[in-house]
Amino acid sequence: MSAPQAPVAPARGITPALQRRLFLVGALLVAGGALSAVAFGDLGESLVYFWDPTQMAAAGEDAVGATIRLGGVVKAGSVEWQQDRGSLKFIVSDGKTEVAVEATGAPPQMFREGIGVVVEGTLTQSGVFASDRLMVKHSNEYKAPEGDMSADERKELYSTVEGL
Amino acid sequence: MGSEGAAADRLLSWDRVSLVIGLLLLIVGHYQGLFVAPAEAMMGDVGRILYVHVPTAWACMLVYTACFVFAGLALWSGKGKWDAAMEASAEVGVLYNALLLIQGSLWARPTWGVFWTWDPRLTTSAIVLVLFVGVLVLRRVITEPERRLNLGSIAAVLAYAGVPIVYFSVKWWRTLHQPFSSPATVSDSFITPLRLAAFGMIFLGIGLIGLRWRALRREVERELSAPALPAALPTLELGQRGPGGAA
Image 1 (cartoon, rainbow over the protein chains, first blue to last red):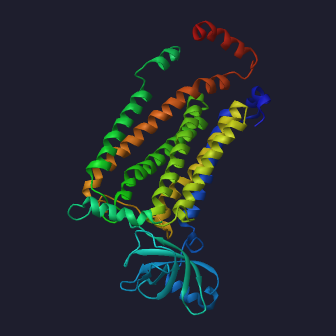
Image 2 (cartoon, each protein chain N blue to C red; image 1 turned 180 degrees about the vertical axis):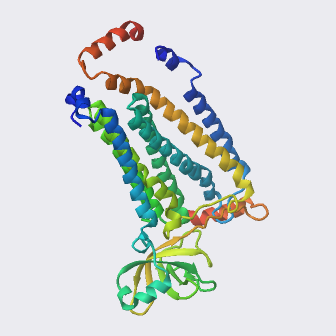
C-alpha cells in the first residue's frame, strides 16, 4: 500500500509480488462468493420482475391499489380493441387464474392473442387490472415466415410500428 | 522489445489484420442479414437487429472474460503488459456493453413497446456497464502505477462477477427479455448471417483491444519500471523522441 516504502517491504516478509498474489486470491474469493450467493442464495423470491395472476390473486386485498407488474398470456378470443376510444380490454391468464385487464393507448405491434405480456398498473376494487403500460414479451424463437413474405406484408408489419 | 517502434509501424500487425477480418465478416454477415435472409415472421424487418444485438452480446462477454484473465495475469506477474491489456479490454468491453444497451432499446421500443424496463437482464447488464466504467475511472484517478495495477485489477476481477449473472439472469429470474436462444429456436436461414456477424464482432473486438493495448502499453510499462527517478525519464523520452518523431 505505502509506495515510498517499497525498497523496505521485503524485510517485512510480504513482498509486493506476494501482496499482489494475495490480492488476486482475495478478489477471486470475493467475486466467486458474490456469484455463488446470487446463484444459490435463492434471490428468486425477492427479485420478481412480475407477478403471475395466481400470485396476485393470492395477495388478495393487499394487491389492490399498489403499482404492480402482472405477466401472463393474452387469452385467445378475449381481446376487445376500440381504436376510436383507444380502449383495449383483454384477459391475462397463467393457465390457472385469469385477470381482466383494461389498458390505455395503442398496443405494440407484436400484441396479439396467445402472446406473453407484462402489464404495469394497479388492481382496482372491482377486480379489473387497470394498466397504463403494456409490454409484449418476445419468445426466444426467431422464425422465417412460412412461404415468402411479400413486400406488402412486410410493410404491413412496419405500419403498426410507425403508429407508436 | 527493442524493435517495438518498428512493430507499431508495421502495416500488417495482428491487431490491424484482426480489425480488417472483423470488418469484412461484418459486411458479409450484414449483407446476408439485411438482403438474403427473410424477415422474421412476427417482427418483420425489426427482427433483423438479431444480427447486430446477439453478436454484440456474445463478443461483449468474451471481451470482459479477456479483461478478467488479463487482470489475473497482471496481479500474478505485476507486469505492465498485462496491466495495459486489462485496461484496453475493459475499454472495449465498455464500448460493446454501451452499444448492447442502445441496440436493445431500439429493438425493445417497437417489439415490447418500451425503450427500457427494469427487467433483471437489462438491469444486470446496466450494472455491469457501470462497474467496468468504475474500473476505468479508478485507473484514471490513481496516479501511482503499482497501486493502479493492484486496485484496477482487483476491481476488474470483482466487476467480472457480474458477467455470469447477466448471462444466467434470464434463467434464474422472470424477465421480459427472452431466454437463451439456440440453433433449435432460430430458423436455419438466420443462422449463417448470425454466425458471420458474431465472428465479425469478435475479430473487431480483438483488433480494438490490440490497438488500445499498443497505445497504452509503453506508457504503463515505463511508469511501472521507473519508481526511483520519475523526473529524469520524461527528459530522456523527449530527447529520444525529438529527432525521430519531429522530423
